[in-house]
Image (cartoon, helix red, strand yellow):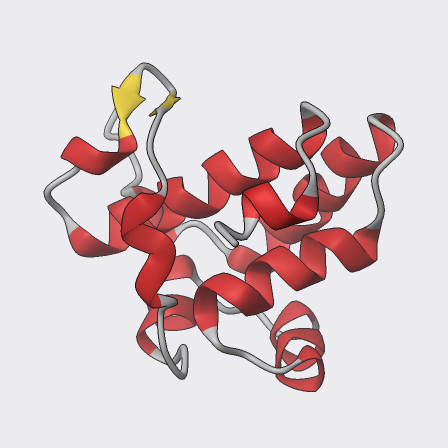
Length: 116
């Protein structure tokens, strides 16, 4: 059985899981959207459009207006791998997003999540 590269996973399929994870921990969809927009530079309208079409993570990040310059401050472990050590740029961006959503679900304040 071959493994599917993470960059080919559909953002459209994973986005609702991010929202569900946040909401289970009494956080909001709006906070998830704020995090995604902060990381990618998308506006809320652009993000909404991307959640309505089948778009994979590779395309989602390739089309992102600008990855936030403070994203390099995101540190920690996701799925047993340190995000700052990931060599593939797309995989690293995906794991940055995963890490930010984890921080949200763990109750971190938005100013700390957004590295302010």
